[in-house]
Amino acid sequence: MFKQFYGLTFNPFDKEIEIDKLFKSSDLNELEQRLRYMLDNRGIGLIVGEPGTGKSTCLRRFAENANKSLYRVCYLPLTTLTVKDFYQGLCTMLGTTKRYRKVDMFFEIQSAINSLYYEQRITPVFIVDEIHMASTAILDDLRILFNFKMDSANPFVLILSGQPQIRNKLMLTSSYPLKQRIIMRYSMQGLTQEECRDYLSSRMKLAGCSREVFTPEATLAIYNISGGAPRVINNIATAALMYSAAKRADSVDEEAVFQANIELGA
Image 1: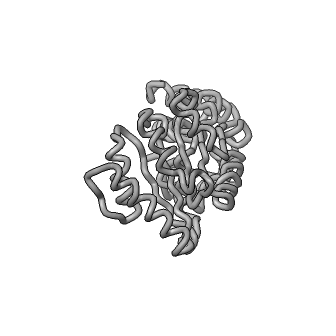
Image 2 (image 1 turned 120 degrees about the vertical axis):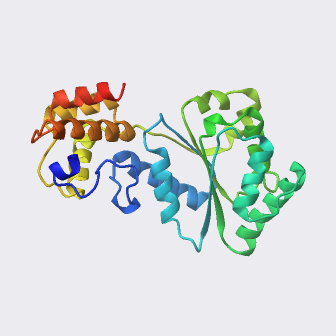
């Protein structure tokens, strides 16, 4: 209903947005530079951020833009994986044979990485998402699995991405060797107040509405409630548009934002 009322061709705050149409926030720009550094130097990187701050979206853009002739991107989200499940997931992504014993899969994975990098001249790029859910055993195996030539070579890029709890896990004595090998760290900050305003405006224009629908007061309220987290901004903005369209209001004001927040149960 709100799409027709405001002359929109699609929901401007839907998460299924095309990669080339992502809003270029300072967070996204900075992270892209850090990821390019990782491609140039290889090794292990860590991206940390609260839920909804755009970690996975940035990584999706990074993965889709990577030169396929130079990089083989493997994405593995961690949920409740066991160590064996983790190894089998890596085998699947690398196209190697799954073995019953972990030690056999260990050598299969390292052999595949060496083959890609040294023989095919393709750098394997591993993105392990939701790393805060990893067990201590998986973190320890990461350190061992991605140790090549007695830690003197890095024929890979390994990006670990997750929520801030991962910092505590990496402080444990058992995970400290892995922490020492991280060469890039970035903490997602979310949108600034100015970026939040520009984001709302640009998304509406992209969907076909050229006028300013969100009042300055509504924009400020959305920013204060969301803390700049894009996912929360999207949810509140969509609910506020629905509320305002139901009232046949030409603009989305502060009241609509507060009502939307109540409806979302925040």
